[in-house]
Length: 245
Image (cartoon, rainbow, N blue to C red; front, side, top):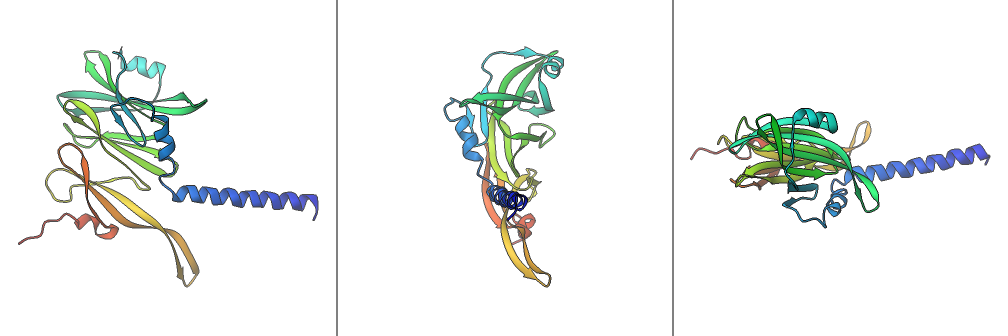
């Protein structure tokens, strides 16, 4: 075997091994949870999740939106009408030194508005990539945030409980959450999809791919979202329909 052929064979072998590792990682949606959780395991906190940490502001910080935009890398801004007032929710990007190395650190900052000033009250910290953040209702509702880790979406929903921001749902999925009022009670349910990897056959040969199998239905109980039902994916939109007597 010539030197060029040996190099090419070695490259192909390494490429196949790398491809196998990537496929294995993509099929395991929970592989990053433990790593993220361990970075916060030693901290005292208000709401620790597998994905991040919600905590009160360590000190009173008064600032303005102009100063935040000038001094921090801002990824997103939304106003959240919740509880007795309105919170400004600002997502920033940074880094955090942990276990001898620098790690990505994203912050969802909850600010109260006082005239022209913004006063920091709470913050949520995570190493996940920021995707989206928006209020689920026009007023008095929940704040839905989506973060990404690998090819998995991490869904974290906040609500004001006893005048304090709380994590009321934390879950993950390969798909974005579905928000539907299934039982027509005026309060939307959260549908989280689940899939499996399948191998089938057709006239053209073997077929490999993912197929949606089930939907987990989470319902608001006044304090948090609780999973009330698991149904086949195809029938999920009829799962909570009330039947006539």
